Image (cartoon, helix red, strand yellow):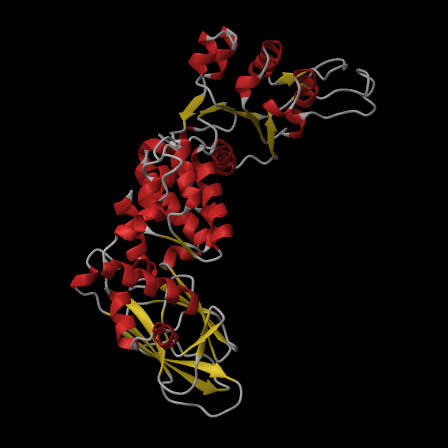
Length: 441
């Protein structure tokens, strides 16, 4: 654990830096927004009076109100990788500096020179430059298919799904069963609604009414007619979540509907035909439910006779954890250190996707910054899994770092707050060149 933490802290500045292949989104004070990929070692930026933005080649022009047009006022320079930077950001990282007396603002802080990190927002003459991790960074997390993230862990072929086939999704809590149910519905394209009913959220006495509906006066308290989830989903898809909690008495009635596509409303007369595709999810494998006597045998065979997917545990797929961390980082606009991601691939994540996403969002709230490192919240995870004794904390191990590592860590810490090379040099009473050298080491 010392090694993971030491590398995470010492390399944090290098890991977060904008590099070749990242994206620059330009929101000009006048004209249309533009997106460019950073491929050049040197980019010169000038301000031009009452001029639409020109974002071509290695010399850009950004509009300004009033004043005179100037030559190159700012320079985005690629600081090349050296031997001390081995394993860090490939191709080096970018430094933005003013070439005159006009400053820029980076995340609200005025500066004349600053290394640029992912998700930084730079304001030059009321034009906003946003630095993003790669061209794909504009994708929202919800748009990214989870089956691509989990890859071959799921045997997934949407072409084999007819419009009326029943689907069984099995997986632990937080493995994305609700997500996949909605994706199946969207891919198949049924004309009706998608209705989600969590069976464990209702008392057994109310479940029949929730599923099949009731007529007015069917029982005490039935003051109005209730349509029921199956009729609400007529022509569409009904997702029955946590069907492992369904009582045996209702398993018979649900089985009859699956066979005939007809229901009898509680207290009603006659049967009603319903065209509904059923997607069922269970936290427990169907064979185990049958073995424990919680499922009827005929219900088991009917439910498992359709399409069946077993959603994998996140702990079994470290590569998926890395991809998820990348997706969450883009969605939440944070940068997770390599040490933090490496630590996450070693944890069991009993809450799977949901736990990982919630944990990172919580870290972001308490961090008050976009760079996320190993901290006390991660120590809590390790303690719960028995990987860290309560009296052990990572910060106690920091004094064992070398003197040179401590110097680099301290400069990085000050720089994260100040974001100005000159100001850091003044505060620490060292030269700006020494600051740049320590941050590149």
